[in-house]
Image (cartoon, rainbow over all chains, first blue to last red):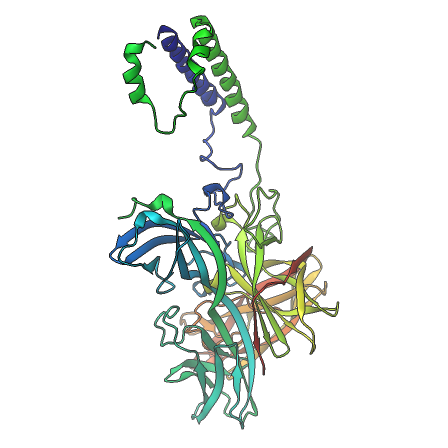
Length: 285
Length: 339
């Protein structure tokens, strides 16, 4: 017993010396953040998720991190967080109008990745499908049978997610035809009507953008496709009941009307991200 | 430890502690119980840690250069994607390919629309870098590798701050071929600066003299023609010098008037946009070697009062750094639209 106590005392003395050594070496310096590598970054992000034993999943330009499991009658609810691993986007803000130029756009906290279809997997391999309700939701809901054993929960798998993808399409509409341009498998734009004004011509375009409750933001139901006029003379624009109307100040007859369809759509992408969640059992609210 | 203390010892055990094997106790009892050895051992370990702590702390004094977001070329110049001196500290998620020592990309979708091929990518910073503090990918020169062993250059790239973490590259391809991969052949270095000029006039219309501004190295911005009239006007500009450089020029024209009214901004029509309701943030403005900008009619009741024009020229330009990164497109989801 005496030997043990002396050993402990010596160890404490050694530790004190160690602390002194570290303090001596760090005189005049700030301590690096715990776990940080030797850069000036202030937050270290593990984009591979390898250091957390698959308790996070990689999804597009984000990391998904389950944070809690709530057990309700015949329902398992998984709470999660999304972390960006993408750098800022190039571009410039409108609010910097007075000094336009290329600069990095800060994180505007617009979601760009959203898990949609999930599978809850138990220790015996039984699978229960689940869903997230929208791009803003941060929980997945899994209907389960009445006799479901919460302690059997082991993993979740993300089967499908959405990623916001920017793309634009220049469109030349022949005025004497009512052309329709398919942009991608889901969306299309067509010239509906032409209204002559005293100060210009208004062109009404139909935007076929199927309502998608998962990704809509309530922006007149047209979240994914915008139109801008190409070339000179375009002065105003706005929504009408079936799409977008643009006005050009040029009152001369035009054979071709040139516009650009600007899309930032939430496309479906497959995933097989498998995430361990059993460590969350008992920690839910 | 005596037998009478064995119950207390059991309480101190953790569930993770390995059970003792039959020979353990006897081996420990055979070891010399020397307090002096324990003291020396503790002190030696402590001293070792002192030395290690001092060494580690001192070694961290070595200067570490972090990625720089902005580099000053002249007073009003900013540069994105500045060169970095930090080597990658680790890797990227599965399926990503590093474009440089900061950022990797993964192709996530091919949209084949008639003769147009749109390849969309997601981006990620290398492990160890903070996404908020890392200069991102600012575009480049791309080649689409086709299954007939030919390549085509990209037409356009699309970025949108609403879609942080992804971008799309557009190619135009001949009939009957399919893409097998893409190659980054040059990485864009985007810069911006501003120049000021001023000219006295006696009302409108006014024709301004030719002006030249040194932009970057051997590149000069030349304002060939600038005419401001009551019903509008135009500005012609072009670049001279290095033919690889392209630019975007956005002037802000301020009219100072003789009638003591406030200075007036004379509006310039933007490059195309009239409808930014659904996408409030522009993406990267297109660049070219020359362009003609149109002016809106000045918002002045009497254009004869214009006596001085002050112009701020905002110039963004792109140069390309050499790159050679090949990215396979196998197993990338394909969406096809027939026109």
